[in-house]
Image 1 (cartoon, rainbow, N blue to C red):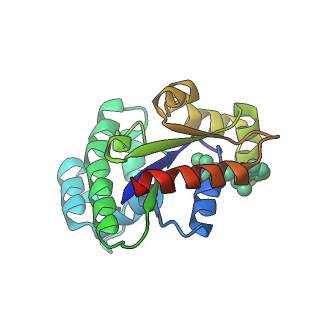
Image 2 (image 1 turned 90 degrees about the horizontal axis):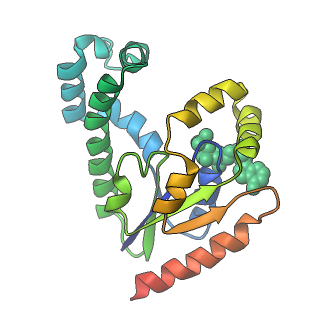
Image 3 (image 1 turned 180 degrees about the horizontal axis):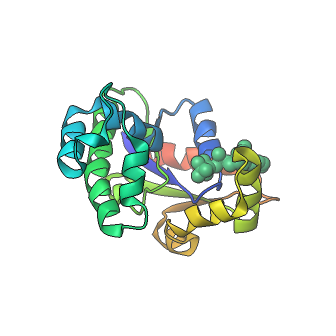
Length: 198
Ligand code: ATP
């Protein structure tokens, strides 16, 4: 079973594209949602988090103290790297477990905002980048999330540039104003089916 990683910078449309593959019957693993879930459901991760950041990382009811963690990693690259070194492998494990439970499909998709940054693309057979001009992405996200342009730009600055991602990606979907998504998705679905049949 082929594993396709889908990524894209903020507001690029990766979730929209992933949903289109789902409509075609392809299972999608949402790494960013899963990353949030496992912070409380993966006992190994919870233990490692407490060891790394102290028991205060969790409230007594077992929920994650996001504010506490955010304060620690905010503007501290070393602490952020420490957090990532715990969470990324845990998401990889969750993906492997998820894949192991799936049968009778030619390929699956892992949607991850940090597919390249986390190196998880190396565990996929192919990577697909969804891309759109920055101004359009800002317009889409500020409308969707009611946040400011500056907040979008701050998040954008934390990710690899689109130029770098273009170099790393095996496939690219252009999601600009005049480019239609559905024909691009159908064409790639066809290509992935052929690759899966080899
Ligand atoms: P994030 O990185 O913030 O999770 P994303 O890359 O998953 O974003 P989406 O949520 O799929 O992006 O898209 C961002 C917003 O832009 C959504 O509101 C979506 O409906 C809209 N959008 C995406 N593609 C298009 C398009 N081709 N035409 C119009 N609106 C679009």
